[in-house]
Image 1: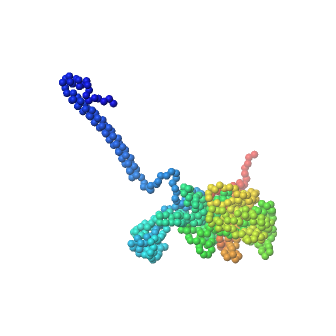
Image 2: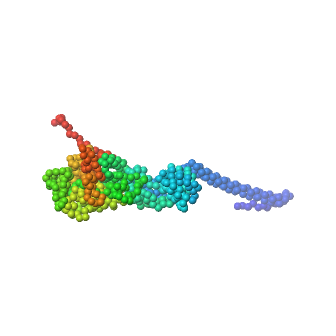
Image 3: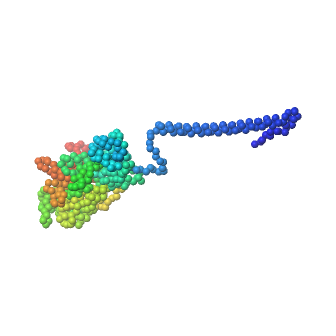
Length: 594
């Protein structure tokens, strides 16, 4: 920067020549310099103030817009920003194969008391007893006036109950947050879901744990935050489950049965589409376990999985299929049915006299005990045991229920020849309806072992081959004739070609002392459609009896079969199966052209 001197020589010389004072020139130049510095400083200050003003304007504008946005938005809890997905603390939902909710969570509250903070314990006890009828006013007052510092009143309450307690206005009544397990469909699929309860709990939180069914079997999965809230998807179809329960409940009532079970299974994947056990319960209000008596009398008892019964003549097809697989017989082989068949002190009889002999097919169609026992004599005890083991009858099923391991088949202590003979027609070996459904699915799908599952979309790996496709197809054809002209004629459903086998077994006494004379387990194991088997349905009734045609009837043909037929009639369209209608041939004269 060029600096102007205060006493420039040229001006000083001119001023002296004119007789002027040179000091005035220096003073004027000093004044001009100060004015220039002042103007420059002012401009700098004004610039800084402008920038600061703009900064304040922008800041207040941002703050104002943010306040406006917050004022117009819906309030929500602040959440910490983290990398990745947030941690899921809730128990995961359970859904059916179509994604419909079977079990979910509901935010609610618990109610507890600090008695020492209460102003009027008598009034609090009286008001609480009015809100919760199951609570005793005297006991509450005794607890409130005792030495206790803390008292649980209710583990979970509804919003209406919470408001009613809040209106009492007692400072000693407090609420804690809770997450309860909710089953929006009530008792539908109750034995599959099982139920949940509280584990470790405090006033601020509680741990929800599964206590039965898939809730307990998959408890770790449902509670694992790493799954990010992904639901547990079951193979159950909610619509079909509801229809099956409705039909079975109606059939159980009409047949005056003590209990009932039904299983619908895909023969190729082993997926259980429906599993029903009656009587049932509401998992929202799960009853207590029986502490005495027969556990099978409890509604918690899963008859489809835990109930092991002698399933009667439904076993006959296994003896015939094995004999055909070994080449010992064919569908047309004539079997000696002359009775009674005597083995030591035991006598085997048929329900009717079928004459001296029947074909293998008619042994199944007419359900001949004598004929089946003679086939079993050809098989032998060891080969029969090995075959039934291959079908899964000698150990509990691997179904994904904690109750599955308790459904252990009851086997004879010594598998003798007479054991083989009686087991061939379903006596002497007790198994669950789920065992039977799996074995029939093995026959229906062409002879490959089926493993039942409650999880949808499992990679269905082909099981070991138990019998050839030819034998399996012949077995299904025999079962079809049981319905079309045999003991299961009431099982015919127009358009769906039902195949199946009835089984009526005397019910064993609870103390192991023989059998009841007037109580049976009636079972119908069916396959449909017979031309291209897709599903197996097993229906079992405990102690059924119906009075018709002037007498009491208990056999499966009169009890379990009509119930199963109605169930197929209801669920087959829901399964997407189109009825097959035979086109009648033209009658009369037909005009043809040459």
